Length: 374
Image 1 (cartoon, rainbow, N blue to C red):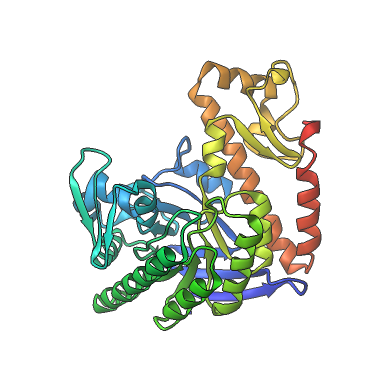
Image 2 (cartoon, rainbow, N blue to C red):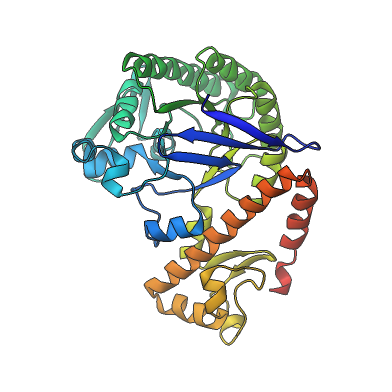
């Protein structure tokens, strides 16, 4: 077994678990910073380790284009190439199909599109995507999947589910044929906001006995009530003894609700991207550092935060760095935002162990509403 549940909250579906990988264990609920190119923008790997990052997400599509599969193979895999000793999850490139649409052409065989770098024609099959990730030696790999923007018609989403299920089966068959023992292959549930389609997707994936299950194709602008309704039904239908991954969810409010419904792992660019554009997350809500009211503010970003940035620098100085376009601005802001996220996840795990998750969740949500006091 690659996943073990070690604590459950008695008042919700929240649980603490351990995902075992060749590069170490990941304690869940966990947040994965996005390092698409094998790096989290503005931070070194040592800074990530110091912040307590357990697992990194990298992008199969981007690394396939640059530096290319042969260079990474020469180094013996992605961990060696980027000098990261902890676990890595690589996503499949399915989001690139979504983001490149309508330029991407999808059929049963795979997806064809032109490289965003030089226009070169690229054709990816489910088998090719798994082959790439086997070379990468990703601890957790995701199969090629197909999802559509919200809103999309029932019939269009039905076809996307059919193709996703077909690709998942081909991915698993190829994975099995290579006798991969240490790497994990997770499945991705699709189907938009239609439970009938999500149910079919879940059933198709359960037949394949994946190592874990992701819920994809959400956080795309659909009403929150629909999103959480789908998550709740999916987690109730997915195996208790396998990890559950909500792809792309990044706001603390949504993460807390998803954990209550039984989600174990998350990824998103929100904390790091927002850091670079001057939006900081604090225990009292969001703070936009470029605002003029901070030009002579001596306080730290968050008086309740113990990160390097908050222990050493004022809002006035951080605003000065941002206004001048200094690289240090991105570094210090990213340190703070990631610390904030990882610290909340640490407290979430503790609250589940103490059967006080709902109380902790409500306290966090109430505090986040105080942003007008920042």
